[in-house]
Length: 115
Length: 114
Image 1 (spheres, chains in turn yellow, brown):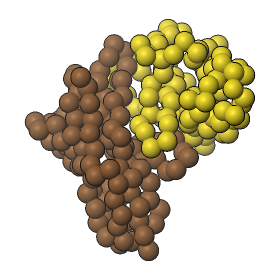
Image 2 (tube, chains in turn red, brown; image 1 turned 30 degrees about the vertical axis):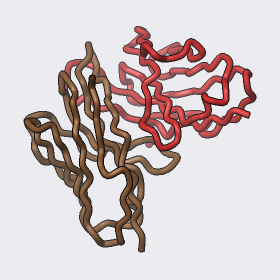
Image 3 (cartoon, rainbow over the protein chains, first blue to last red; image 1 turned 120 degrees about the horizontal axis):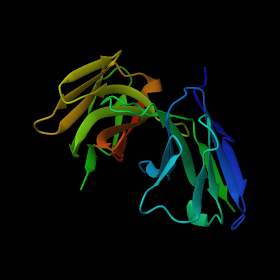
Image 4 (cartoon, helix red, strand yellow; image 1 turned 90 degrees about the horizontal axis):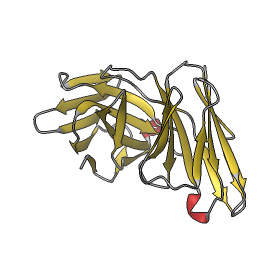
């Protein structure tokens, strides 16, 4: 059963043309994350939502925005994609809270190509 | 600065052989350590998770160890299979507010050859 779903799996956009990536979850988790992963590199956290609270990483470019209209959905908006934004974008969720074993569950990723 | 270092960067083994991957970390405050397997073009999948009080955890042919004193972990794969070919990522969680912030290692790329 799919738990963290990302659409589309592959996205091609043009330089400067806005693009939106989608993530949905069936786990009812409080926290949703967006990561950027470039080839042969570790995933890099862009931002996360704890419920409706948005938390941006200090080095995330302004070009990247996010929306979470409800518990199940979270969107990544890239306002003006550059060639350097071509990457795999991973969505993850976790229950949150105080447990030390709070586990993040990753979606399959969306591979973004910028032409 | 929170860091996770993995070795080797890449590894080639023959099917049926065992291998051990290493992870050293400097992360504070430490919450847990997790090994993920990431197939090419897919999202990471959790293999094992250990808190500071656990020093070994098994999941089938995967066995992870943790030495919280020396801040080292290893992932041992026994009787490797072709499907084990993937990147193995050591991820250490640092407690940050109400959630665990993940510090990722760069991964070890394992190739299992017939």
